[in-house]
Image (tube, rainbow, N blue to C red):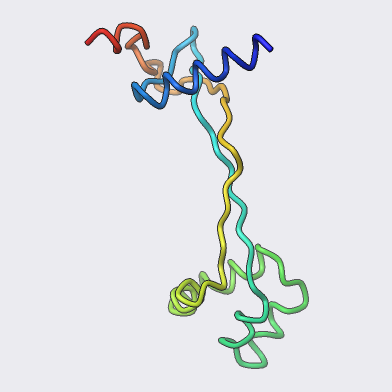
Length: 114
């Protein structure tokens, strides 16, 4: 239970003060993953037979994204028709190595006092 409380406190402080706490050469930050899904019926309405066949063999994220990168106007149409949906997981804390060596220098408690 204590670990969950610490996680909640850290998350709240990061959100409130917009500061990632630094620990040595690592920092804690809030991470959130996304998942993109495609409505195959809506997508099929915008493709001719040959185009649809090129992605229909395996309608997965990679094949559709590759096709849409070649046809950016189609991506806009699909977004307007809500054929593409992106959902996000619950945010969680993660650690990362500070690449530039600086990180967030301000302590969360000091930022609150300012």
